[in-house]
Amino acid sequence: MSPHWRLTPGIIVLAFAACFSIEAQIVNGSFEDDPWPATGFPGAMTGWTGGIQLGQPRGTPLVSRPAGPFGGNILVPAATPIGAQGNCSAGIWPDHPNYTSHTMFQKVTLQPGRAYELTYWAQSMNIVRAFAVLRARVLDESGTSLAESTDTPVLGGGGTTGFHSYTLYVPPIPGTGVATIEFSNLSTNPDTEAAVDAVSIVPVPRQSPPELDLPVRSGNTWVLAWSDSIPVHTPQTAPTPNGPWTDVPMGSLRVVDGKRLVDLPPNSAATTLYVRTVAP
Image (cartoon, rainbow, N blue to C red):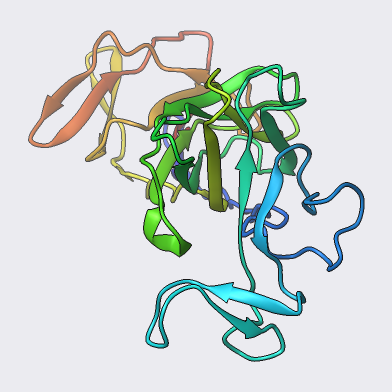
């Protein structure tokens, strides 16, 4: 949100609004943090419903490490630094009668009104060279899809070498900020398995507030000007600092010398008018 101006016959007051952020946490996005032996059904993953753990979690007697300076796929004791972090990802079975679930998910609490990016690694895993169809979705509290992407991950190999990175933009979260991160394997081929790793969701950096010029009168109209390099901020007006705030109609919007200009709607009954710009 930008500073906002108060327009009166002879007084202008400048005020500022503070913003607070909440960092979101995905439980066990690396799929390593599980006990050994596994609790519940074999391969159950902490923090997630559905899916199955692939590889060996931290704490196992021996952990297989991918290729590195000491060779590939070697077993090392989990108690040593090279094996302490495990070597895991999540497997998602296809949408086929042979399997009871082809989806895994967990709920997270995000900051309402804030946009996010969901990032993850993925690969297809099988020996018949068939590709998984991986759908990533972020759902709001009511189960409505806010963002989704359907990918066909490449056939992968051992360790991190077979994974490719994916990013999904999530628009501002409505309501209380509760959302569900969901991955589904939509393939109907029983030989296709999707592997997912390194799942995280982070806030999209906010756009810096634009430089808001002092509104100027043009005849019977006030003209608002601001320097916004990306047209994401929306001007609003209100009769008091507490609102109600109303978006300014953008029909008069024009760009002059790199600034965006818009005419404020006339309101002869108002003796005071507050103006601000807001970002989504």
